[in-house]
Length: 173
Image 1 (cartoon, rainbow, N blue to C red):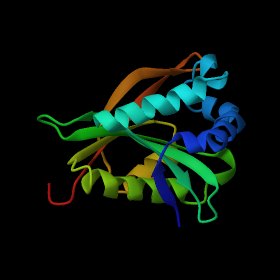
Image 2: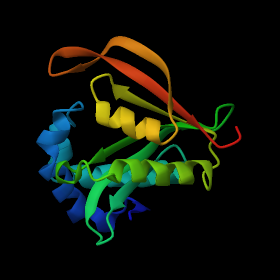
Image 3: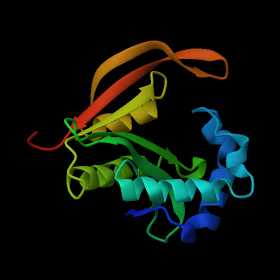
Image 4: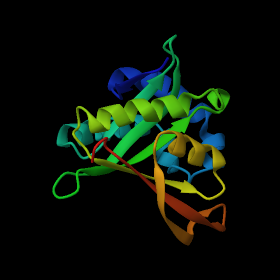
């Protein structure tokens, strides 16, 4: 069983350990964060930005903790558009040591409950690289359907890759 909670200043040391400890793993799959993120004040600044976005209702970042309270991942709802769309984009990352335990699937389920419940959104979009079978499976198992593909639109380590676009709609919408 997992718990999601909004990122806050009290999470700083756990978040720093999580980000630094998984940096190479994440950068093998997604574009690298700027080096300044890992320097003094970088993660603190990111937390402050996350808090401002939550207050403005333009984004909501959550930490994923296991039953023992260990930080196992992050999940976020970003690019929230209220007027006309009531939609957002989903992103997540799970610690390398915690991959394959079903945490991404459960965390996506939990954040969809928040998105469609307390946040009142009706559509959540997500992207995945064509070769990222794990993320594609997580999305599909949570009710996401593919609605598009962009060809050679994402560059990672100098290689261009295709991206798949997914959507999940609130029940009954």
